[in-house]
Length: 515
Image (cartoon, rainbow, N blue to C red):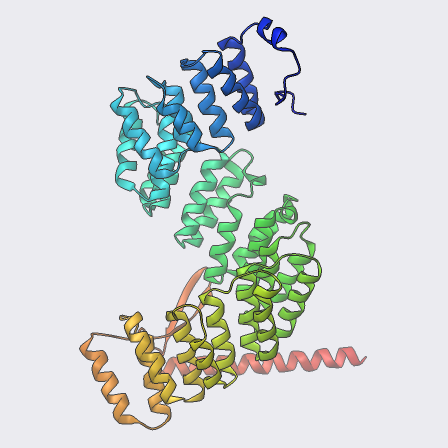
């Protein structure tokens, strides 16, 4: 029994109960605060009832403690009921509810707070800024910035950190940098927030440079892993294997990465997207804790590299260990089966989604199945599958069907898929280019000319594909036809020399291994 539990059946007689002294507002307030600290909702609600029966309400202190109790226990509607019933809510009550409310309700409370004549303090401003960050409302955030400066709150590290976070999430990275540079004091949370801001903006070099600085300048940042998943995600997106390995090395030195699931998952994803599936598997193997995201990430890692059999093996191992797959897991494994031509396995897993695991297939799962059948050449079967869908086909599904038609030069179904995509994605030039490719493959030059004329009328221009290589931290892009002929000759000569050197090295290795 909880120490604050009140029995539903009276343990004393009516006479004894009548002789018991009524609870005072002070005693109830102390008990309510203890319930709030413990998250004990049921005993707190019973104390609320006793306060009502004992005539202790309304009382400013008790009402505020009740708001705190219900906010701490996550029962926001009851906290709001108590708050709305207060004749004149205190600033403390406003701050408690403001910090716990969702963004829209928090901003509505902020307006009510100002209308009541209260002055913003170091608790209200960060809570309001967090709401602005969630809503990407930089205009109101900048207004609060002005309030913070005018009221002398900017030197507070929590206030300035919330400002920095708001600007970073709103995409105003320059403003975030100015706030960061002007802060008189910066803790590990602020450094991580700035690093994460650079990482989200795709500025990997600046993020890594700031991360390195923070290791020396910020207290406790060396062992703080909060910025690591975002850093690793940007390394994965940019293909920055060396930077990712550097971060991995730092995590190994702080002896914490293998016990942090989010960092472990980000490492697996980074190595896989940088082409190092073996390293991704090694990280997965040493992780002390794994969740469904860990397994799904590894399955996806094998799938995108065409290792469908291995992805299937990992999926079966996951199920055998009683890890419940989710919708992301099924997207990963179905995509893996599609890229490796495992049609029967993919169909079996799709059937088991709802029947065995209780996961309702979404449009993405249907698109994976269409891609699976289409890649295998079963275009008509894919069309029949679409007709049986319980939902309206979306762009991803028609895109998968169009790609399959381009692979197998199926004009009739390709035209159907392409014209549906023209309606759903009016400005997507790749759909027109794909249909042009199908027409060109079957020799229908008149259709190619007509489609290209239509693209010119719509002002569509295909972005040329490119390859790039990173040399000393600088990315060099190469477009088709952008390299002069004399440079191509020099590049081919260098490649020939490298191939010769590699061949000589392999011959030498064979010679040494023989002896």
